[in-house]
Amino acid sequence: MENELSLALPSLWGDKDRPHTAREWEYARKPELIELYSSQVYGRTPEGGGVTGIEVMSRNGRALNGLATMTQLRITLSGPRKSKTAVLLLYTPNSATASSPAPVFVGLNFMGNHSTTSDPTIEVIPGFASAAGWETAAAERAAQARRWPVGIALERGYAVATMHCADLEEDGPGLAAGGVRGLFNSEAELASPTPDMWGAIGAWAWGLSRILDVLATIPEIDATAAIVHGHSRLGKTALWAAAQDPRFAAAISNNSGCVGASLFRHASGETISMITETFPHWFAKNLNAYADDLEALPVDQHHLLALIAPRPVHVSSATLDAHADPRGEFLSTVYASPVMELYGYHGTLPRDKAQAGSDVSWQTAVELPTPEPGSRVGERLSFHMREGVHDVLAEDWRHFADFADANVLS
Image (cartoon, rainbow, N blue to C red; front, side, top):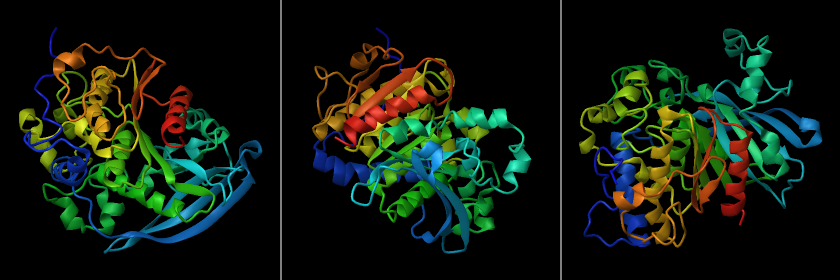
């Protein structure tokens, strides 16, 4: 038996002599971990700012062959320095009412709200469409829309809310001033950021919380049953949003990989060195220091999953997504499971091996096989892997809905 980790994981508990209880986790360890992730990984989210305007742009009560009501909302987001607008697309099942509101999946998209659906009434963001050729690239639009099979959620009683991540901040170095970070920080500050200044992941996560603010104003939506989700870099974003904002009832990451669900210290997949070189704008500058000194990093991503507990967390992977490290993502759920046990729930660690308040040994973890593709394992903290590549498909959404049914609606 050989340890799969390149280095020993830092303990879930920090100080080994402190009591390992739910109360201690909630009131002492959680604040420590939020501080570590804020200062060393994602950057500090500023205080203040919020939604200062909501405008209904359009509404169609017979969308998707009468299954749902489609609403487009123009949201004004404000910070200490200025304001900007973003567009929220919401599909609400027509069975939802103010007296029986719908739970809701909340997530950002990569290519514009219009790319998530074949609905021709969805507004195309000016400038973006012409740059990407969306007016004529029907095949490309269809390829993106298959990542959003909203009918699966709607038919099971869930609403679906989405916003283009670039409506919050464009994904590239040097573009922060035009996004939500520019609502809080000057161009000079963003050009020479402090080591713990927030990156794009933090900005997108802030935007997810503002979407939740908006949903809380809509009678047909149950904002207390909001499941935040995301694919790839937006999966990293969903986890960080849920860790910071306890109003999210549950979190789902899909193929989120390095600085997402996967363990830094699992010797496979993308590394801190690789991701900070390619995407320097996503994180706090402090993360760069650990590229060549991983042993000094005080957290690993089982801490991030555990931060969301006792709220439900689901991690989704794909067999051929070596870059995102499916085995490392699964092991992260295993090593985080003891925190769920503190609250009386179960994760992916088998019950006969579970021990609340104790770190999982590598000898125990290495004996656990990665689940077979197509099956969801675990309970309050769960995992599934499908056959295929880095993507999010209808099969994944069915697992998402099963997870939400079992853990959010039960």
